[in-house]
Length: 175
Length: 238
Image (cartoon, rainbow over all chains, first blue to last red; front, side, top):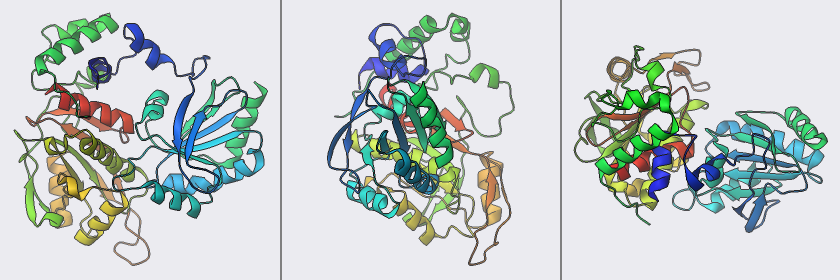
Protein backbone atom coordinates (compact mmCIF):
# COMPACT_ATOMS: atom_id res chain seq x y z
CA UNK A 1 0.00 0.00 0.00
CA UNK A 2 1.26 3.45 -0.86
CA UNK A 3 1.86 5.95 1.85
CA UNK A 4 -0.68 8.41 0.53
CA UNK A 5 -3.40 5.82 0.95
CA UNK A 6 -2.29 5.22 4.50
CA UNK A 7 -2.58 8.88 5.34
CA UNK A 8 -6.04 8.98 3.85
CA UNK A 9 -7.02 5.97 5.90
CA UNK A 10 -5.53 7.26 9.10
CA UNK A 11 -7.55 10.42 9.30
CA UNK A 12 -10.73 9.47 7.43
CA UNK A 13 -10.25 12.82 5.83
CA UNK A 14 -12.48 14.33 3.24
CA UNK A 15 -10.02 16.94 2.09
CA UNK A 16 -6.60 15.94 0.85
CA UNK A 17 -4.22 17.51 -1.57
CA UNK A 18 -3.47 16.40 -5.09
CA UNK A 19 -4.73 13.36 -6.92
CA UNK A 20 -5.99 11.62 -3.82
CA UNK A 21 -8.74 14.16 -3.35
CA UNK A 22 -10.00 13.56 -6.86
CA UNK A 23 -9.91 9.84 -6.45
CA UNK A 24 -11.81 9.87 -3.19
CA UNK A 25 -14.34 12.55 -3.97
CA UNK A 26 -15.48 11.20 -7.28
CA UNK A 27 -18.40 9.32 -5.80
CA UNK A 28 -21.24 10.61 -7.94
CA UNK A 29 -23.50 11.56 -5.06
CA UNK A 30 -23.18 15.31 -5.50
CA UNK A 31 -24.62 15.39 -9.01
CA UNK A 32 -21.38 14.37 -10.67
CA UNK A 33 -21.06 11.08 -12.51
CA UNK A 34 -19.72 8.08 -10.66
CA UNK A 35 -16.65 6.89 -12.49
CA UNK A 36 -17.42 3.45 -13.90
CA UNK A 37 -15.22 0.55 -12.97
CA UNK A 38 -14.65 -2.99 -14.12
CA UNK A 39 -15.61 -5.78 -11.81
CA UNK A 40 -14.93 -9.47 -12.02
CA UNK A 41 -18.07 -11.52 -12.68
CA UNK A 42 -18.81 -15.03 -11.51
CA UNK A 43 -20.25 -17.94 -13.45
CA UNK A 44 -23.75 -18.42 -11.99
CA UNK A 45 -27.40 -18.34 -13.12
CA UNK A 46 -27.84 -15.16 -15.20
CA UNK A 47 -24.12 -14.40 -14.97
CA UNK A 48 -20.99 -15.56 -16.71
CA UNK A 49 -17.32 -15.69 -15.88
CA UNK A 50 -15.73 -12.42 -17.05
CA UNK A 51 -16.03 -8.74 -16.29
CA UNK A 52 -18.72 -6.10 -16.15
CA UNK A 53 -18.56 -2.32 -16.27
CA UNK A 54 -20.66 -0.67 -13.57
CA UNK A 55 -22.46 1.56 -13.69
CA UNK A 56 -23.24 1.33 -17.36
CA UNK A 57 -23.72 4.70 -19.04
CA UNK A 58 -26.86 5.14 -21.11
CA UNK A 59 -29.25 3.25 -18.87
CA UNK A 60 -30.21 2.96 -15.26
CA UNK A 61 -28.15 0.61 -13.07
CA UNK A 62 -29.24 -1.16 -9.90
CA UNK A 63 -26.24 -2.23 -7.88
CA UNK A 64 -26.41 -4.26 -4.70
CA UNK A 65 -23.48 -5.06 -2.42
CA UNK A 66 -24.05 -8.25 -0.46
CA UNK A 67 -22.32 -11.18 1.22
CA UNK A 68 -23.33 -14.81 1.47
CA UNK A 69 -23.06 -14.78 5.28
CA UNK A 70 -25.61 -11.97 5.45
CA UNK A 71 -29.11 -13.12 6.38
CA UNK A 72 -30.70 -9.83 5.42
CA UNK A 73 -29.08 -10.07 1.98
CA UNK A 74 -30.57 -13.52 1.68
CA UNK A 75 -34.03 -12.20 2.44
CA UNK A 76 -33.57 -9.43 -0.14
CA UNK A 77 -32.89 -11.78 -3.01
CA UNK A 78 -36.58 -12.38 -3.73
CA UNK A 79 -37.16 -8.59 -3.73
CA UNK A 80 -34.33 -8.08 -6.17
CA UNK A 81 -35.65 -10.98 -8.26
CA UNK A 82 -39.09 -9.38 -8.44
CA UNK A 83 -37.66 -6.02 -9.48
CA UNK A 84 -35.42 -7.75 -11.97
CA UNK A 85 -38.34 -9.65 -13.49
CA UNK A 86 -40.22 -6.40 -13.99
CA UNK A 87 -37.39 -4.20 -15.21
CA UNK A 88 -34.41 -6.39 -16.04
CA UNK A 89 -34.77 -5.82 -19.77
CA UNK A 90 -34.31 -2.06 -19.58
CA UNK A 91 -32.18 -1.70 -16.49
CA UNK A 92 -28.74 -3.06 -15.61
CA UNK A 93 -28.93 -5.29 -12.52
CA UNK A 94 -25.70 -6.25 -10.76
CA UNK A 95 -25.21 -7.83 -7.34
CA UNK A 96 -21.70 -7.74 -6.01
CA UNK A 97 -20.28 -9.68 -3.08
CA UNK A 98 -17.58 -7.91 -1.12
CA UNK A 99 -16.65 -10.82 1.12
CA UNK A 100 -13.14 -12.29 0.88
CA UNK A 101 -13.13 -14.93 -1.85
CA UNK A 102 -10.91 -17.81 -2.81
CA UNK A 103 -9.44 -18.69 0.54
CA UNK A 104 -12.28 -20.18 2.59
CA UNK A 105 -15.36 -19.02 0.68
CA UNK A 106 -14.85 -19.77 -3.02
CA UNK A 107 -16.45 -18.38 -6.16
CA UNK A 108 -18.19 -21.74 -6.51
CA UNK A 109 -19.71 -21.28 -3.03
CA UNK A 110 -21.06 -17.89 -4.03
CA UNK A 111 -22.38 -19.33 -7.28
CA UNK A 112 -24.19 -22.09 -5.40
CA UNK A 113 -25.66 -19.57 -2.93
CA UNK A 114 -26.81 -17.48 -5.88
CA UNK A 115 -28.54 -20.45 -7.53
CA UNK A 116 -30.24 -21.30 -4.22
CA UNK A 117 -31.63 -17.78 -3.85
CA UNK A 118 -33.20 -17.07 -7.24
CA UNK A 119 -30.25 -15.12 -8.61
CA UNK A 120 -30.81 -14.50 -12.33
CA UNK A 121 -28.73 -11.44 -13.19
CA UNK A 122 -25.09 -10.37 -13.22
CA UNK A 123 -23.12 -11.53 -10.19
CA UNK A 124 -19.90 -9.66 -9.49
CA UNK A 125 -17.11 -9.67 -6.91
CA UNK A 126 -15.43 -6.71 -5.28
CA UNK A 127 -12.55 -8.69 -3.82
CA UNK A 128 -10.21 -5.71 -3.51
CA UNK A 129 -13.04 -3.55 -2.06
CA UNK A 130 -12.50 -0.76 -4.59
CA UNK A 131 -16.19 -0.37 -5.22
CA UNK A 132 -17.11 -0.74 -1.55
CA UNK A 133 -14.64 1.98 -0.64
CA UNK A 134 -15.70 4.36 -3.39
CA UNK A 135 -19.34 3.99 -2.41
CA UNK A 136 -18.33 4.34 1.25
CA UNK A 137 -20.64 1.40 1.92
CA UNK A 138 -20.56 0.72 5.65
CA UNK A 139 -22.43 -2.54 5.50
CA UNK A 140 -24.41 -5.03 3.48
CA UNK A 141 -26.86 -5.11 1.91
CA UNK A 142 -26.14 -1.76 0.32
CA UNK A 143 -28.18 -0.79 -2.70
CA UNK A 144 -27.52 2.01 -5.16
CA UNK A 145 -29.54 3.15 -8.18
CA UNK A 146 -27.59 5.12 -10.80
CA UNK A 147 -29.35 7.13 -13.48
CA UNK A 148 -28.37 6.88 -17.17
CA UNK A 149 -25.69 9.52 -16.60
CA UNK A 150 -24.18 7.38 -13.84
CA UNK A 151 -25.21 9.78 -11.11
CA UNK A 152 -26.36 8.25 -7.84
CA UNK A 153 -30.12 8.69 -7.78
CA UNK A 154 -30.80 6.62 -4.67
CA UNK A 155 -28.84 4.68 -2.11
CA UNK A 156 -29.89 2.60 0.84
CA UNK A 157 -28.21 0.57 3.53
CA UNK A 158 -30.09 -2.42 4.89
CA UNK A 159 -33.15 -4.25 3.70
CA UNK A 160 -35.36 -2.84 1.01
CA UNK A 161 -38.24 -4.31 -0.97
CA UNK A 162 -39.25 -4.69 -4.60
CA UNK A 163 -41.77 -1.83 -4.48
CA UNK A 164 -39.23 0.64 -3.08
CA UNK A 165 -36.65 -0.48 -5.61
CA UNK A 166 -39.12 -0.16 -8.46
CA UNK A 167 -40.01 3.36 -7.37
CA UNK A 168 -36.34 4.34 -7.03
CA UNK A 169 -35.63 2.96 -10.49
CA UNK A 170 -38.66 4.78 -11.91
CA UNK A 171 -37.46 8.06 -10.41
CA UNK A 172 -33.98 7.53 -11.82
CA UNK A 173 -35.39 6.91 -15.28
CA UNK A 174 -37.43 10.09 -15.40
CA UNK A 175 -34.66 12.32 -14.09
CA UNK B 1 2.37 -8.08 -1.92
CA UNK B 2 3.21 -7.56 1.73
CA UNK B 3 2.59 -4.17 3.23
CA UNK B 4 5.74 -2.13 3.58
CA UNK B 5 6.45 -1.20 7.18
CA UNK B 6 6.89 2.49 7.75
CA UNK B 7 8.61 3.91 10.76
CA UNK B 8 5.92 4.75 13.26
CA UNK B 9 7.10 8.24 14.02
CA UNK B 10 7.19 9.13 10.35
CA UNK B 11 3.63 8.02 9.95
CA UNK B 12 2.43 9.93 12.99
CA UNK B 13 4.08 13.03 11.64
CA UNK B 14 2.50 12.52 8.25
CA UNK B 15 -0.91 11.99 9.79
CA UNK B 16 -0.66 15.18 11.78
CA UNK B 17 0.31 17.17 8.73
CA UNK B 18 -2.62 15.85 6.77
CA UNK B 19 -5.05 16.75 9.51
CA UNK B 20 -3.60 20.19 9.97
CA UNK B 21 -4.05 20.84 6.28
CA UNK B 22 -7.49 19.39 6.14
CA UNK B 23 -9.21 20.93 9.11
CA UNK B 24 -7.66 24.00 10.64
CA UNK B 25 -10.11 23.86 13.53
CA UNK B 26 -8.59 20.65 14.79
CA UNK B 27 -5.00 21.80 14.91
CA UNK B 28 -5.14 22.81 18.55
CA UNK B 29 -6.06 19.31 19.54
CA UNK B 30 -2.91 18.04 17.97
CA UNK B 31 -0.39 20.49 19.30
CA UNK B 32 0.43 19.18 22.73
CA UNK B 33 -3.06 17.73 23.04
CA UNK B 34 -3.78 14.37 24.58
CA UNK B 35 -4.57 12.90 21.18
CA UNK B 36 -1.02 13.49 20.01
CA UNK B 37 -0.43 10.49 22.17
CA UNK B 38 2.30 7.95 21.59
CA UNK B 39 0.19 4.97 22.58
CA UNK B 40 -1.71 4.84 19.31
CA UNK B 41 -0.91 4.97 15.61
CA UNK B 42 -4.25 6.13 14.25
CA UNK B 43 -5.51 9.66 14.55
CA UNK B 44 -8.53 10.17 16.78
CA UNK B 45 -11.83 9.14 15.20
CA UNK B 46 -13.98 11.80 13.59
CA UNK B 47 -16.27 12.30 16.54
CA UNK B 48 -13.52 12.11 19.16
CA UNK B 49 -13.76 15.66 20.45
CA UNK B 50 -17.47 15.42 20.98
CA UNK B 51 -17.33 12.02 22.60
CA UNK B 52 -14.22 12.11 24.73
CA UNK B 53 -15.99 13.58 27.75
CA UNK B 54 -18.81 11.08 27.62
CA UNK B 55 -18.71 8.18 29.99
CA UNK B 56 -18.32 5.44 27.42
CA UNK B 57 -18.52 2.05 29.14
CA UNK B 58 -16.30 0.06 26.77
CA UNK B 59 -12.60 0.78 26.20
CA UNK B 60 -12.31 3.47 23.59
CA UNK B 61 -9.66 5.26 21.54
CA UNK B 62 -6.33 5.56 23.36
CA UNK B 63 -7.40 3.43 26.33
CA UNK B 64 -5.96 0.09 27.37
CA UNK B 65 -8.06 -3.02 27.16
CA UNK B 66 -8.73 -4.87 30.41
CA UNK B 67 -7.20 -8.22 31.23
CA UNK B 68 -9.44 -11.20 31.66
CA UNK B 69 -8.96 -14.89 30.97
CA UNK B 70 -11.59 -16.66 28.91
CA UNK B 71 -11.72 -20.24 27.65
CA UNK B 72 -11.04 -20.72 23.96
CA UNK B 73 -12.77 -24.11 23.60
CA UNK B 74 -11.69 -24.73 20.01
CA UNK B 75 -8.08 -24.38 21.12
CA UNK B 76 -8.42 -26.34 24.37
CA UNK B 77 -6.93 -23.56 26.40
CA UNK B 78 -7.62 -20.28 28.10
CA UNK B 79 -6.78 -17.04 26.35
CA UNK B 80 -6.09 -13.87 28.24
CA UNK B 81 -7.32 -10.75 26.51
CA UNK B 82 -3.92 -9.13 27.08
CA UNK B 83 -1.72 -12.11 26.34
CA UNK B 84 -0.91 -10.79 22.88
CA UNK B 85 0.38 -7.48 24.21
CA UNK B 86 3.89 -7.05 22.87
CA UNK B 87 3.29 -9.69 20.19
CA UNK B 88 0.22 -9.03 18.13
CA UNK B 89 -2.42 -6.44 17.39
CA UNK B 90 -5.89 -7.69 18.31
CA UNK B 91 -9.41 -7.33 16.99
CA UNK B 92 -12.26 -8.16 19.34
CA UNK B 93 -16.00 -8.24 19.15
CA UNK B 94 -18.87 -9.56 21.27
CA UNK B 95 -21.54 -11.69 19.69
CA UNK B 96 -23.97 -14.57 19.94
CA UNK B 97 -24.32 -16.87 17.00
CA UNK B 98 -28.13 -17.06 16.89
CA UNK B 99 -28.16 -13.37 16.08
CA UNK B 100 -29.08 -12.80 12.46
CA UNK B 101 -28.93 -9.03 12.30
CA UNK B 102 -25.88 -7.13 13.49
CA UNK B 103 -23.63 -9.96 14.77
CA UNK B 104 -22.82 -11.53 11.40
CA UNK B 105 -21.58 -8.09 10.34
CA UNK B 106 -19.47 -7.76 13.47
CA UNK B 107 -17.89 -11.15 12.90
CA UNK B 108 -17.51 -10.44 9.18
CA UNK B 109 -15.54 -7.28 9.89
CA UNK B 110 -13.00 -9.40 11.78
CA UNK B 111 -13.09 -12.01 9.05
CA UNK B 112 -12.47 -9.35 6.38
CA UNK B 113 -9.31 -8.26 8.17
CA UNK B 114 -8.29 -11.87 8.74
CA UNK B 115 -8.49 -12.54 5.00
CA UNK B 116 -6.46 -9.40 4.37
CA UNK B 117 -3.90 -10.49 6.97
CA UNK B 118 -3.37 -13.71 5.04
CA UNK B 119 -3.20 -12.02 1.67
CA UNK B 120 -0.93 -9.21 2.82
CA UNK B 121 1.18 -11.48 5.01
CA UNK B 122 0.52 -10.00 8.41
CA UNK B 123 -1.41 -12.98 9.79
CA UNK B 124 1.21 -13.54 12.49
CA UNK B 125 1.00 -9.94 13.65
CA UNK B 126 -2.67 -9.88 14.57
CA UNK B 127 -5.11 -12.04 16.53
CA UNK B 128 -8.91 -12.14 16.44
CA UNK B 129 -10.91 -12.69 19.61
CA UNK B 130 -14.65 -12.83 18.89
CA UNK B 131 -16.33 -13.47 22.23
CA UNK B 132 -19.76 -14.98 22.76
CA UNK B 133 -21.96 -13.78 25.60
CA UNK B 134 -24.36 -16.67 25.10
CA UNK B 135 -22.57 -19.82 26.31
CA UNK B 136 -25.90 -21.63 26.73
CA UNK B 137 -26.61 -21.72 23.02
CA UNK B 138 -23.08 -21.20 21.75
CA UNK B 139 -21.54 -24.51 22.55
CA UNK B 140 -18.01 -25.15 21.30
CA UNK B 141 -19.52 -27.21 18.48
CA UNK B 142 -21.88 -24.38 17.55
CA UNK B 143 -18.94 -21.94 17.49
CA UNK B 144 -17.07 -24.27 15.16
CA UNK B 145 -20.02 -24.41 12.74
CA UNK B 146 -20.47 -20.65 12.94
CA UNK B 147 -16.80 -20.16 12.08
CA UNK B 148 -17.25 -22.37 9.04
CA UNK B 149 -20.34 -20.41 7.98
CA UNK B 150 -18.45 -17.16 8.31
CA UNK B 151 -15.53 -18.49 6.29
CA UNK B 152 -13.01 -18.23 9.11
CA UNK B 153 -9.54 -19.39 8.11
CA UNK B 154 -8.25 -21.81 10.74
CA UNK B 155 -4.90 -22.26 9.00
CA UNK B 156 -4.04 -18.62 9.66
CA UNK B 157 -3.79 -19.65 13.30
CA UNK B 158 -4.90 -16.26 14.58
CA UNK B 159 -8.61 -16.67 15.27
CA UNK B 160 -9.84 -17.61 18.76
CA UNK B 161 -13.51 -17.91 19.65
CA UNK B 162 -13.74 -17.01 23.33
CA UNK B 163 -16.51 -18.53 25.40
CA UNK B 164 -17.12 -17.73 29.06
CA UNK B 165 -18.47 -21.00 30.42
CA UNK B 166 -21.63 -19.77 32.15
CA UNK B 167 -24.10 -16.89 31.67
CA UNK B 168 -22.73 -15.42 34.91
CA UNK B 169 -19.17 -15.58 33.59
CA UNK B 170 -20.37 -14.00 30.34
CA UNK B 171 -21.84 -11.08 32.32
CA UNK B 172 -18.61 -10.65 34.19
CA UNK B 173 -16.37 -10.79 31.13
CA UNK B 174 -18.42 -9.00 28.50
CA UNK B 175 -20.52 -6.52 30.46
CA UNK B 176 -18.61 -5.89 33.69
CA UNK B 177 -15.07 -6.08 32.31
CA UNK B 178 -15.46 -4.88 28.73
CA UNK B 179 -18.46 -2.62 29.22
CA UNK B 180 -20.46 -4.21 26.43
CA UNK B 181 -24.01 -4.46 27.73
CA UNK B 182 -26.33 -7.29 26.79
CA UNK B 183 -29.62 -8.63 27.98
CA UNK B 184 -31.53 -11.70 26.96
CA UNK B 185 -34.93 -10.98 25.50
CA UNK B 186 -37.84 -12.90 24.08
CA UNK B 187 -37.32 -16.35 22.71
CA UNK B 188 -37.41 -20.02 23.40
CA UNK B 189 -34.97 -19.87 26.30
CA UNK B 190 -33.18 -23.00 25.34
CA UNK B 191 -36.12 -24.63 23.58
CA UNK B 192 -35.51 -26.52 20.40
CA UNK B 193 -37.52 -24.41 18.02
CA UNK B 194 -36.68 -20.84 18.87
CA UNK B 195 -33.39 -19.32 19.95
CA UNK B 196 -33.10 -16.88 22.82
CA UNK B 197 -32.45 -13.44 21.40
CA UNK B 198 -30.40 -10.69 23.03
CA UNK B 199 -30.35 -6.95 23.06
CA UNK B 200 -26.72 -5.95 23.02
CA UNK B 201 -24.31 -3.14 22.34
CA UNK B 202 -22.48 -3.48 19.07
CA UNK B 203 -18.75 -3.01 19.58
CA UNK B 204 -15.66 -3.93 17.58
CA UNK B 205 -12.26 -3.09 19.05
CA UNK B 206 -9.07 -2.70 17.07
CA UNK B 207 -6.28 -2.90 19.65
CA UNK B 208 -2.61 -2.33 18.97
CA UNK B 209 0.36 -4.41 20.02
CA UNK B 210 0.79 -2.35 23.19
CA UNK B 211 -2.77 -3.12 24.25
CA UNK B 212 -4.26 0.30 23.45
CA UNK B 213 -7.48 0.76 21.52
CA UNK B 214 -6.89 2.28 18.09
CA UNK B 215 -10.53 2.18 17.06
CA UNK B 216 -13.72 1.30 18.91
CA UNK B 217 -16.46 0.91 16.35
CA UNK B 218 -19.93 1.04 17.78
CA UNK B 219 -23.48 1.47 16.61
CA UNK B 220 -22.95 -1.18 13.96
CA UNK B 221 -20.04 -3.00 12.39
CA UNK B 222 -17.37 -1.04 10.57
CA UNK B 223 -17.66 -1.30 6.82
CA UNK B 224 -15.49 -3.87 5.08
CA UNK B 225 -13.11 -1.32 3.64
CA UNK B 226 -13.04 0.81 6.80
CA UNK B 227 -11.91 -2.06 9.02
CA UNK B 228 -9.31 -3.14 6.49
CA UNK B 229 -7.97 0.38 5.98
CA UNK B 230 -7.64 0.95 9.73
CA UNK B 231 -6.01 -2.43 10.38
CA UNK B 232 -3.52 -1.89 7.58
CA UNK B 233 -2.70 1.56 8.90
CA UNK B 234 -1.96 0.13 12.34
CA UNK B 235 0.18 -2.66 10.89
CA UNK B 236 2.00 -0.27 8.65
CA UNK B 237 2.42 2.43 11.23
CA UNK B 238 3.82 0.18 13.90
